[in-house]
Length: 324
Ligand code: PBG
Image (cartoon, rainbow, N blue to C red; front, side, top):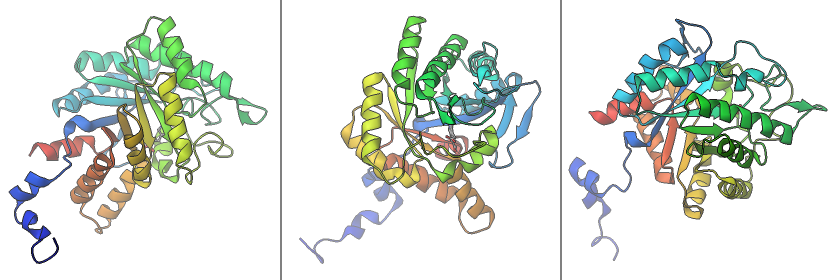
């Protein structure tokens, strides 16, 4: 049945009609809000490269977490900065790292908030790579052991979910085993499974002071021309015990999210990364884009592609808008 019998504009006539037939709805339930924790006390320092993002010391993070919880956002994702960096990133598994202290504060201030911790060495190593270096290369298996120590330290601190973002082979299995033997059978793993070697992490690396001092991350993060490796990475992570898998970044990889949605029956998270966030903010600051409109359209596109969970620096702003 073609035009004039068929007129698709019939269902677009009013706001109520459009709401009635729209297939995808954004909800605050989808959001995870990333937070940056630093050593010290009394610190709430703006992150220059990322609009409205801050470094918080553990003592001030409880108040922020309470605000996040009051907006009904279900989870936060913690990134830590160390007091000092070394070749193995040993502060990452310290029992009183900024992250370990922050988890305790958050659990006190907002007991129902799900606390996810990023598990990766790049912010803790003096060379800025995501693992330990041997003969000029990141040593996969030795790194897995250290990541497992870091994950157990976070679990001991009270994390609900640990999220390895390093892209070493086999790290999910090593972490699962370490958690189980330490008695943390209920701590879940959200694996950064399909993480691409993207240019969109730039603003974050300034925030986490984690840019590699030499070379790049292409020998461990994925090549962006390849969708098949992404599916293999996800399948392997599920086999090794991942409870949630992630595609990262989100916008240049909506096709990967969509494929993963069709192929796997586990929750899929997508990370709307710092560069994607700052593209919109920079364009809005310059007067080229309507910030709120571009934000909501972007977040919805990630949901429509098939993500169940959206990790976004816009979580608080979007939650406020969705409430109205
Ligand atoms: C650490 C890590 C990175 C991000 C999350 N975890 C940076 C990287 O891999 O270089 C990026 C997040 C963002 O850009 O918002 N491995």
